[in-house]
Image 1 (tube, each protein chain N blue to C red):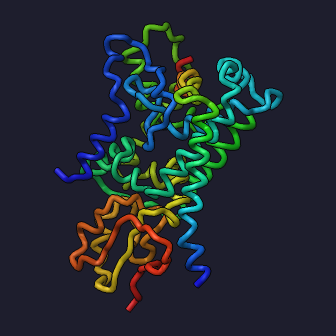
Image 2 (tube, rainbow over the protein chains, first blue to last red):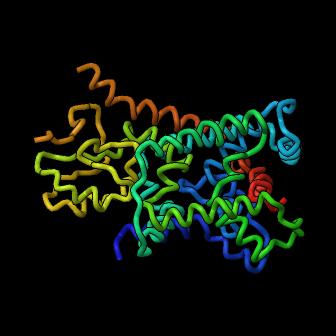
Image 3 (tube, rainbow over the protein chains, first blue to last red):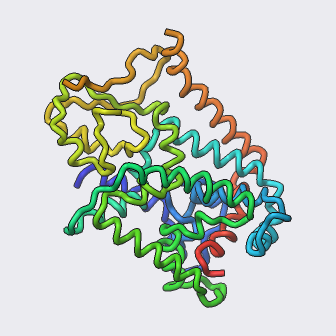
Length: 302
Length: 49
C-alpha cells in the first residue's frame, strides 16, 4: 500500500482515537477537545479527540455575535456557552493562528496526506462508475463557504451555519450518534437532521463520480489553506525536463496541470504527479532561506 | 530584486504573525479551555438538540 494511504489512515485514527466512547457513551470533552486537529474532522464524532478548526472558528465568532442580531437559535447557542464568552477573542486568535500556521508551513499538504474527509473521497472515487470532471468555476464555492457560512453569518446570527450544513458533521457526528447514542437523552431528530442527511447523500454520490468534489467546491478549511498555499514553505516546482505529456493531470485528484502553476491553491500536495511523472520533472520540498531566487518554476510552452 | 526578496520574506512574516496569534490565544484563554464550549454547539449543529 502507498505511503499516503498509511498517513491517511494514521490521520483518521489520530483524529478519532476516543474508543472509550463505546463503554462510557460520553462524547469526550476534555482538554484535548480545546485544541484543533489540522484536518477536516467533526468534533461531535463520538470518537473525536480534537476540535474541527472550522467548527471552532464559527464557535468563536458566534460567541462574539451581538445578541440583538442573533436568531432565536443563535441566542440559545450563545446562552448555552455564556460561561465561555470571555474566551471568545482568545479562541478566535488561537483558531486563526492555528489555521494560518498549518497553511503557511504546509499549504494544503494536510488535505492530501492526513485529512479523514479527503481520504474518504479518495476511496469513494475508486468505485467503478462513469466519471465527471468538475467545471473550474466551482472551486470558488469553497471561498464563499469560508467567508459567508463559516465566518460572516455565524458572527451576525450566532448560528454555525457551515456546521449545520456540513456533510462531514452528518457522517461523523449525526449518524453515529443516532446509531449509538450518548448516555444523555437526545430529543427526536427533526427535519434539519434529514436535510443534513440529504446533503451527505448528495456529496457521497458526487464523490463516486468526481474527484474530491467536497475539497474542491465546499471545504472551508481547504479554502483557508489554499489562500496560504502560494506563500507556504512547502513548495513544488517543475523543471525543464517536463514535456507536458499530461500524465500528471491524469493522476491528479484535483484535476490541475501542475506545469501551469506548481503552487496552485487547488493543489492538495498529494504528490501523485511527482510519482507518475516519467521525466522526473516535478520537485517538492520545504523552502527555507530568504534568497527568493528559485521561484516560479513552470516550464515553457514549447 | 527587492520584490523577490519581499516575496521570500512573506512566509516568515506570516509565520511570526500566526505563531504569535496561536500562542496569545492559548495563553489568554488558557490551554485546553479556549474551545471547551464548542461541543455544546456540535450537537445543535448536527440536528440532535
